[in-house]
Amino acid sequence: MPQDHRPARSVRVLLAEDQGMMRGALALLLGMEADIEVVAQVGAGDEVVRAALAARPDVALLDIEMPGMSGLDAAALLRNEVPDCRVLILTTFGRPGYLRRAMEAGAAGFLVKDGPVEELAEAIRKVLRGETVIDPALAAAALGAGPSPLTARERDALNASVDGATVADIAVKLRLSESTVRNYLSSAIGKTGTRNRMEAMRAARQQGWL
Image (cartoon, rainbow, N blue to C red; front, side, top):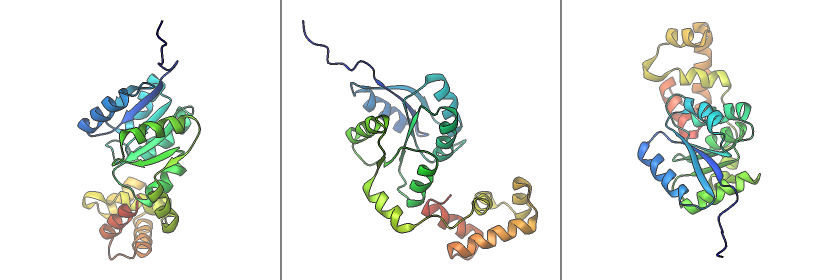
């Protein structure tokens, strides 16, 4: 009789990617690996934990920029809600600040999307074995860039500045006084070496601090 070379158990993967075409392509390519099974697919960050609780994946493959919630925030929630699930961040944006935040959120790996699917499949296997997988060029850049200079509240104030929000709007959203919001924004502007809060927000995003 011919021997069955299929693995006894496939690696169960949850795929979170907001672009439908990219999500479908990744699911198709990963599904061609004999030992990998995509058991859940979502298109928004706030759907990740619910899907993980239902499908119980071994590895969650998360994009960073998604509607509802970022992949970094979803990773932090997964660490608490589904601690047995290993997280691998896959993103277009290879920013040093993102890598640091991913590691702080408990991610076991961080790769950029321009690599071959074979590399991604091997990364999934490695994080399942307890290894940490990080894009080498990004790791070197992160070490050189240093940690984010922004405090959590300064990040909150900058994030709340989108779409032309006024200081009063930000104060209501964050439940802070307007003077406190101004102080946070002023400090963030100084730390990013920019002229106003919109420039500060853009600079912080380019570094991966937001």
